[in-house]
Every structure is written in structure tokens, then in C-alpha cells.
Amino acid sequence: MEWLSWFDAADYEFARQVLQRGVAALFFVAFLSSLNQFPALLGERGLLPVPDYLAGFSRLRRPSLFRRHYSDRLLRGVCVTGLVVSALLVAGIPQVGPPWVPLLAFLALWLLYMSIVNVGQAFYGFGWEMLLLEAGFTVAFLGSDQTDPPRTILIMIVWLVFRLEFGAGMIKIRGGREWRDLTALYYHHETQPMPGPLSRQAHLLPKPLHRIEVVGNHAAQLVVPFLLFFPQPVASAAAAVVILTQLWLVASGNFAWLNWIAIVLAFAAVSDPVVHAVFPAVPLDWHGETAPGRETPLWWLVLTLAATGLLLVLSYRPLRNLLSRRQLMNASFNRWQLVNTYGAFGTVTKQRIEIVVAGTLDEDPDESSDWREYGFKGKPGDLRRIPRQWAPYHLRLDWLMWFLPLRTVHEEWFHAFLGKLLEADRQTLRLLRHDPFDGAAPRWVRVRLYHYRFTDRRELRETGNRWMRTLLSEPIGPVSLRRTPGRQR
Image (cartoon, rainbow, N blue to C red; front, side):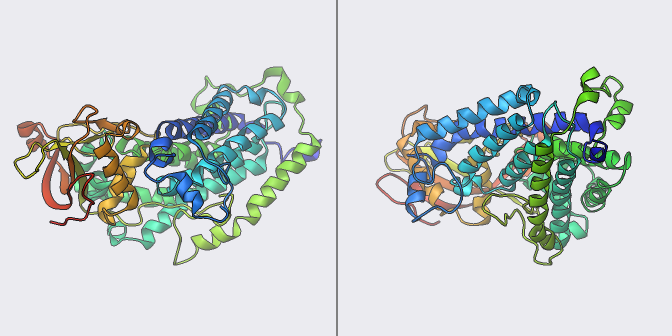
């Protein structure tokens, strides 16, 4: 039907391939992260057990398969199912069939992961969780190899990228003064929640380059997003800027899948002719002689336009939020976590305060006791250790540890964590990089706060350390199973 020529975006097949397979790959990472960590953090014997959480509601109002019953076995079943479905989508198998096949596959991922997020409490309270859910729902309507990509859905994905980038930019402009006086990146590379292997080198760049970084960030988040809606090749060029800036963030830190999903979604603005012009090896005709015969069924057109209409209606409150002086960051306006508002780092922490947990086997501990420190996988601890690259994998315990000094160390889950260390709980110890007692239970643990900073080049040569630290306080400890936390020093 000729009147469908605008609706069918035949020259965005490469974009569809990246969007479907990329979002599915990130769902795979998310389910893998949950499979490995959820039971220890939130399971039946976790730090914040889901059964206790559900018991606090007469009825959980957010959609979840665990609303009436939770078990670690059911959680693992949900994760394994999510892993299998996402792997099939990465391989492109559902996309070979009719458009309803990948639609159902992505909606299954959306519902399964939403079930986890909605009982995940503090460990799932980050913007990239709802971002993945919204992306999964929207990408579900991109169709299959039997139809051309629907243009309206591509536009809604571009609208998602706009909200993600422009929302983050406005949060910064309305936030801390450091973003307006261009000094934010004097600190950010050092104080971000989980540094990566190149974070120290980024921190040691000359301060004029840090100021240029901030200017570039403002341009990429406040100006470039508007260009995503322009005709080609301007839209593709704008998407390239988004992709390159996000790759710099990938290289300089660990932000779970936040940067990777922004990269994937930005391809919604990239057309096949532009991709072919830059990379001639990428074909213009993805489906050979079958491409001209592809037609959009009427039922699929109606369904896709209905989904587009739903997303447009739900866009009212996020749009109003973008224009508000009291802009919310990482907020959802409906139970289904669709068309959300995003943003990050409205203010930048000036100093890095790290929690260091240590234990001892001594009966009566004092300063001369043999205190051994627990090692975490992602957060700084060992002064000589180069931070690892974990993203897009998400280390949930390490992330929450960064927030404790900014709020209080006396949070329920953290005291539960100390109790698990005193019990030498195996599933909790598996969340750590290093158990100094090799599975044995310490008699006492304590918590100290340190100021961490990156060493400069001279200090690295002289000491071999990548970090320097200074003791600030001991807010908890020593405590044992016979003695509750609370002793202050």
C-alpha cells in the first residue's frame, strides 16, 4: 500500500538490528546479574528478604510475579527464562518469524524483569533499571524481518534518547554550581561510585581539559539531542556524538549498562545509507531479493500505532517534568515504568569517602589485634589494585556501599551484611572479591571511614599505590554476634 510509504522505514534496517539485539543483550546481562546476586541480597535469607518486604503490604500494587509468593527457586526460574529468551533475540531467531513473535519475546523480558525490579528495593533503585524496562517495551514493536521497521516506533525511541540526554543535562544545569563553573570533572573521575581502569588517568588530565570536558558534556546533552529529530544526515551525526560521548563514559567509569543502552538506543536515528557511506562493508539491502516483497499487515499497523499513541499520551508528565524547575530525576509516573524521566549526577561529590570493613579472630580486640580487611569486587579498597572494568555488569552491593557515607552507615541492609560476615554466610561471601578468613567466621568486625584519593604520577612511582587514604572515623565497631552495632568513636 503506497500510503504506508511514510510508516515503513525501510532504510533503518541496520538500526533495527542494533536496537533489538543490543537491548536483548543488555537484558541478558541484567538477568545474569540478578541470578548471581539477588538471592544473597534479597532472597529468602538475603540482606533485605523479599518475603519480609511483601509481608509489609496488604497488596503489592506494582506488577510482579512475586506479588503473592517469593522463593529463591522461582527467582532463579525467572532469571533463567529471561536469559534464554534474550539469548534467542540476540541470535535473531524470533525475528525470522512474524512480527508478533519478537513482540511477545520482548514483552516477556519486560514483564519478567519488572517482576524483579518491583521487589528489588534499594538494590534495584537506579535509573538504568527503568530505562531498560522502557527500552524493552518500546523495542518490542519494531517488528520482524518480515516487515519494515515502523517509523513511529523509531521516533519514540529517539524521544527516549532525548529524555535521557536532555534530562541529564538539565539536572546538571539546575544542580550543583560545579557544572555551571565548569569544575565538576576536577572531582568526578575520582569520586564516581565505581571507578574503572582508566579513571585515574582521566582524573590526572590537566584541569583545562576537564573544563573542556564539561563544555562538551553540556553541548552533547543540551544541544545535540534536538538534532536527533532533524533530517538525515544530521540525525545520524547527532547520534554519532551521543555514541562517542557515551563511549568516553564507558572508558572512564563503571555505570552498569547506562552508557551501553544509550549507545544502542542512539542507533534509532542512524539510517542505512549513512552507515553504508561510513562503513561500505555494511550492505544497503539486508534481505536481498525478499526486501521489496515485505508488506506491513493491517493488524500490525494498527497495533504499532496504538503503542505509539500510548507512549505519546504517557509523555505528558515527563515533558512537563523536563520544563519544571523542580525537575525529578529517575522517576516513573506509572506502575508499568513506561515513558520515565531520567538524569544523573546533578551534583558531584568533592571527596571520596570509602567504607572499609575488617574482621578479627581475637577474643578481646583492640588496635593491636590482627584486623583483616574484606575486599570488594568493584569499589576501592586495596591501595595498589587497579580498578576493574565491570560495566555493563552491575555490582549492586558495591554501588550501595558508595552511598552509605553520603547518608548513614546505620541502614538495615548494611547491619544485616555485617551479621552475614560474622556468620561467614557463603552466599554473601560470594559477593566479595576477597574473604580474609577463607570461609571461617570472624569473632568481631568493625567499620571505618577513609578518605581515598588517586595518587599522582610521582606517588605511584614511589609507592606503587594507585590510591592514598586517610582514616577519618570508626562509626561502627567492634561488634560481634553477641553485641549489636552502635558503639561510636
